[in-house]
Length: 142
Image (cartoon, rainbow, N blue to C red; front, side, top):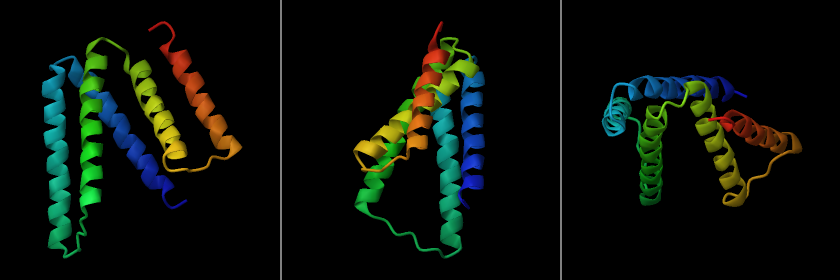
């Protein structure tokens, strides 16, 4: 379970990501917000890459890895734009964020099951069903 503290820190960062998109959406067009977000994220990633290079760490690259990273970038870029649009339409953060994040967790799990042929325990499958129920309850009336 040495991954759990890092996963919880990641969740905290994703919470900030969604929270600050919600706040920014009230003050910027979605496209501007998405570009600023991506520029800051690219700068952070570039600084980390330079640090690794200065430390002499090898950076093994593959075409497949770069292509998959580009697809992830395309996905997150579209997700950011759409998140700005959702919040620009006045959806409360307390509803929009759980639907977006819960939906992404559910769909990633389905992709893991179908494409990667991963397995779930009955308790984990129950957790996914609770996500479906939570999305349905949150989306009611909005």
